[in-house]
Length: 186
Image (cartoon, rainbow, N blue to C red; front, side, top):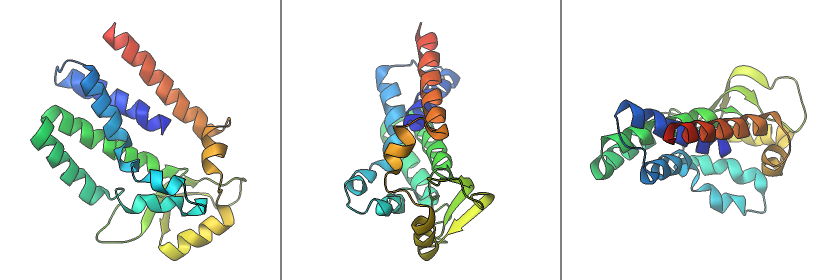
């Protein structure tokens, strides 16, 4: 979440600079919203009693083959090319972020495959063997098995509200993006 906000800010600054677009509050807010938008359906899963079902929020909008071209076209038609490019890049980086380290991957190849794909590391509340590898491929059965062994029902609290390597990374990117924003508008 904090990483996505930082990505939205950095993407907006960079693309705005490339296209010589004025960095307005509107442009910046759009960049942040675009970077968070794939997670909008997470709200309903956050309040479920079974927190282990939260990964399912990625079944709705975390479908890059569909989301990126359709969303980019809609933004282009209604908001123009600069915001369309900000939408595409910030959404793509959101998907990369959700495919690495703490998530259960996303359906990169949907509608051709219903499997989720994750890269490099899978978060577990305890360090365990087998959680570092280049590629994880999950179907519904495999993800439930993985979550029963490694899942953390309090993942939000344990990752974002405690000093944890991923929280440090997320806050670092956010702070760096705010510093760059401050220096850019000065």
